Structures are given as C-alpha cells and as structure tokens.
Length: 275
Image 1 (cartoon, rainbow, N blue to C red):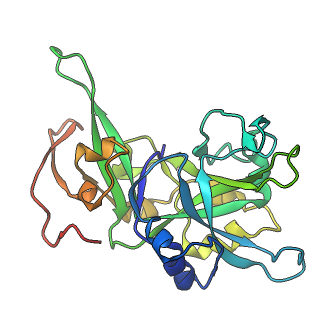
Image 2 (tube, rainbow, N blue to C red):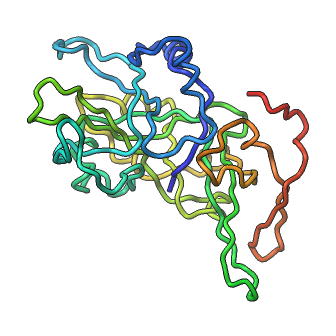
C-alpha cells in the first residue's frame, strides 16, 4: 500500500515543467504550502489530468494540474449532511489489477485517470520482536528514484456532488493505484504504488478512451530497479512531523536471513537538510 509520501514541488512549477494549465487557483504563499514531507490521506494533493475545456468536447484535451482530496469518494456516495459526503472507508489506494471491476473505482478507471506526482513514498518494514517483548517493530523506509527525479504514480479520480444542494461546489478526490512489489522493494512490503512512465502518459490520461490493459499489469523490472529504498527516521511515523529531517538517512544492516534493521546515523554525504 501507499499511505504516506513526500512532494517538494508546487502547482505553478509543476504546470510550467509539464506545459500544463494550473487550475489550483493558489497564490504564491498557498503554493508553498503544497510542499510536504509527510503527505497523508484525506489531505489535498496535486494531481495531473488531461481534459477537454468545459463545454468543448471536440477540442484537443490539455494537461491540467488540479488539487484533489487524497481518498477517492465515488460519485454515488450519499451525503452525510448537506454538501458533505457521508464518511466511509478512506479509499486512498486501489489495486491496479481490480480497479476496472471494483464498484468504487470502475467508473473512474474508464475516463478519469490521473497522475500523482511525488518525490518518493514511505513504507514500513515489519520485523519480528524479541520473544521477551512479543511486539513487532515497524521500521520506516523511503523509496525514491535513484537519480532523484520526480515519480508520477498512476491514479484514479472522481467528482462528487450533493445533488440536493444545486449550488454546492464539486469535490474532487483521488486514489493511488498499487501493484505487487518486485525485486528488492518486495523485501520491505509486498505492495507499491504503480509508476507511470512518461511514454505511457498519453494513453493513460486519455479522457476519451479506456487505458490499455497492459498499463495496469504491474511494474517492470527496469522500473523497479531504478527505485532505491533507504531507512529513515521514525519521525515520519507521526503525521504531525513534517520537514526535510524526515528524509535524513538511517543506517541499515542485513543479518543475511532477510531481516533488515537499522539505526539513525548522521547525514549522508551531500545531505544538507534542504531540498
């Protein structure tokens, strides 16, 4: 699963890099608030979609940067109170191999697919505890591209409206697709977010056609090998902590039996705490 990640871009910069339209309507100060080293479900996150202009279905679709609630709310969800969807299970992840048939995601899988940009994501390795303590230990790891480039994960999105409140603002929400982890990543967790390589963006984001099935098949060995994992501080365990210190590396050791442990060390060479 993917329940926490880091992003250090803002919508203006992202839109400029992708030649996209920034539809977040944020001023400069608000844009900086989108930088987060500890993004958690239910917060508003940056996404990239490709859509036609409103009321112009025949025009060429364009890339657009939008903010959405992380935790998809299906369009058929009932209102809990006027203008507010009823609370339910936070759908912040969806299995890529089931998304096209699962009731909560299948409508979005047809024509509402997105990219979720991130610097990297966190996962926790569960280690067996000493018999005397009898409690498992969870060790946080940070996964990112080996060359430091931004990752774009496959996602789905939805639009929710309270049909009883005609003037209510639509609520945009999204989920991140996950797939089986492979290679060294599988030693930390059996699931991982599904990366979407740039050469597949056109097909993945196409608002007029379903995505080719092969794009949901899983991560390739080459893509998995390009992602490195490093242990980080347990500061990330609390969503109240949010700063570059969360990415400070810790030192890991392997006992030879597939058991990984680590201790906090000093900053890695070249790590200044600034990103």
